[in-house]
Image (cartoon, rainbow over all chains, first blue to last red; front, side, top):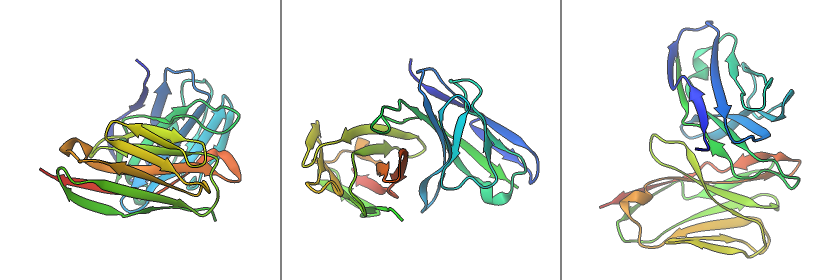
Length: 115
Length: 112
């Protein structure tokens, strides 16, 4: 079954404690992306990756890091989480044809609370 | 900067009534995508429109892409409780087509 998986699904942590949210897709997609979703602000892109070792900033990259060492995995790293990073996080993947982006497949989401 | 606006922000209907959400872009879009997010769920792709004036139907859902490719609409005929959720539109960033610009979504509530 084609899918995007994220772990953990729920996480409560404290300010400053480094954490990683994993994301994996089994569709051989080149493009992967991280979004955060906050009430009233919709989906905002954090980082995206066009392929292995190719990453770029989205609209709200501050406080986040990513890596793309393998095509299927795209972890999101919060080196020193702060309360304003409390949010619902989605990973997404898609094919990346020449004309732009294809269907975005979203993971189930990770709900993060930073105390 | 480039913006995608969606209206209305919220809509509450009685089951059986029709529903329409509108998506307006500040720039011409090469294509537009629509997604649905159920409460507590993740966005799920519905459709992509590419051609000027394109109309596509999925059962009770009708999607339109404007002639100028700057606006789009999603119309649901005879809503059902299963239609509840937030509907998002998204279009490519004019300066970087590998980034999507998302509308803030229209949240639909359906009274049984």
